[in-house]
Amino acid sequence: MQIIRTENLKRDFRVGEEVINIIKDVNLSIEKGKLTILRGRSGSGKTTLMNLLGTLDKPTNGKIYFDNEDVTIMPDKKLDNLRRLNMGFVFQSVALISLMSAYENVEFGLRISGYDEKQRRNRAEECLNIVGLGKRMHHMPPEMSGGEQQRVAIARAIAHKPKIIFADEPTAELDTNTGLQVIKLFKELVDREGITILMTTHDPNIIEVSDNVITIEDGEVVYE
View (cartoon, helix red, strand yellow):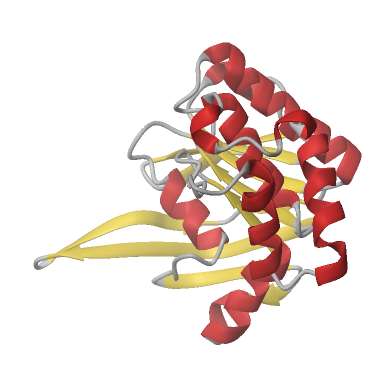
């Protein structure tokens, strides 16, 4: 079953009088409950495509359907709610608040998403245990390794129980072994929690553990 589907998706950028076609007539679908890798070289358009699918950017033309609802015609307030309730984001830069502990970072994310106040503590602790940081939850980000910080970011992204997580190059700043541990964690979340994950990468070592691979070259999907 599909969670996201696109029809003839395009994204152009104007530089002076020149129009640059970044995403060109992309038609793809993302399956529910799967780990899908969006791969491509630097400059291929994969981050732009992910931003479109995550409604962080708007297409020049074409349609994006999320759970069979056309998000390209949604008003901004409804899009904000869609992201807040149904989507989680993990970026190359972990973007943790350095003056907050791991627990506080996750709990703060729950607060922003409007999660029930009485359940926030238990859910934050549960998610940190899921990512293997139960004993480190009161440590500050500067006291943690890069891999641990990324796991805190993942705990924050899954805490409000989104339908899909968008992860843009989440292993790019990590060594190979730590990066593979993060991907193994993603796979466990898909299998155990039923979450859908869409992740960008150009690392061939990571692709082997995915359920689906979508390759993008020069703004076009070349095969799925």
